[in-house]
Length: 170
Image (cartoon, rainbow, N blue to C red; front, top):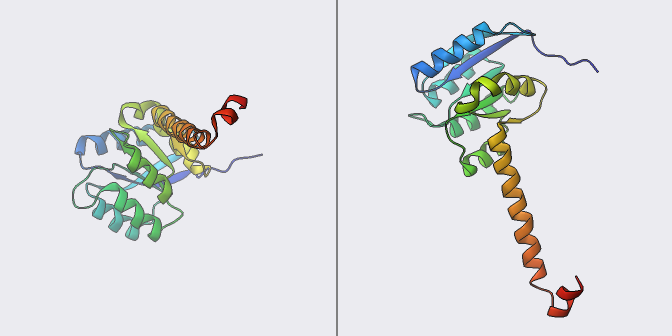
């Protein structure tokens, strides 16, 4: 089955640190395999990102979570309403479980740790363009651990309802 990936991806980079935006833009500009990036905008706040999405209708937004005026979670919520087809990849320094759960619920396409950006970003973008969700390995491991903990605690609570004899037989 042949995969269809866009050749020129309209991209907005959102981070409150100039150096991060600069580095990401250079990374994207140097990428020439399979597709290229057209960085149509850069924003340093979530509010600015939402305004840019409204005006520029990008294919992809690469966004930090912690920013002034409006954080990446609220910006993601508003961008998903404005442009549901837009792929959003979160790029963050920390993996916070509650934020991750909310962002997955909102429909992000990827969650990449800044410490893994060189290894993970292009893989996350390719996954997003195929309609998949990409999670950095550390993030995926945390989700697996949370799921295992949830299953184990559920099983323990069900087992505690059994009589001593039922537990023995089980």
